[in-house]
Amino acid sequence: PIVAFSTDRAVAGNGVYLLGIMPDQQVDRAIAFAARRGLGRFAALVPADAYGDTVLDALERASGRHGGAVVRIVRYAPQAGEWREPVLRLAAFGRPVGGSAPPFDAVFIPQGGPALRRIAPLLAYHDIDPGEVRFIGTSLWEEPDLGREPSLVGGWFAAPSPAESAAFLARFAEIYGRRPPRIATLAYDAVALATALAGAPGGADFSPAALADPSGFAGVDGVFRFRPDGIAERGLAVVEVEADGLRVIGPAPRTFERLTN
Image (cartoon, rainbow, N blue to C red):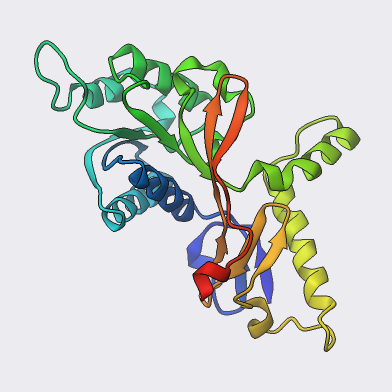
């Protein structure tokens, strides 16, 4: 078997297992959480690229699955670096003259980094108030200082639980003097997986059946298990952006027992 860090579904299967944290699982976790809190009308501000296609498809599927709907989609060219025009298109949707709350409960913004930090304040400036409309993202939002942008405070995203990886991140920073790249935790989990399979009671077992153990494995990013198609299913947390950091508001499952039984 080959264990890869990719999120490209096209390469999964036939002995290839992907440890990557799949965007569609992040979207489904966040939307399910939002739906349980009464949010059902979603707008989306999504890049016009392959990543945007993936997360938009996931958003439409997740919103339908959890009783909601995507009521407005705005695509934009991410390489252009022009955010005002797509934000204006989103802000103008369905808003009566004289203004009122937008006809959606949440805005899905899948990008992170500098793009997110430019988009969010523009939304707030053009009357998409984060106090009325929830901003929802993906694990690309996983930056400890994200709350320095006031318009992102209160935003939600799904990602591996920070509590699970805290010790690893602290140890890495102590040794190397910097925060590790996201791939570092995947590499750690791959080694932990190999160690668990090598130490099986009956001897080392790297068979497809062992890799697809429905009980899964415990990694630094939380629990995960491989589906028959080679994709890793993960237990994800829902995280809220606060002014001074990130806070878990929807804990990640610690086992797959409830899903299996």
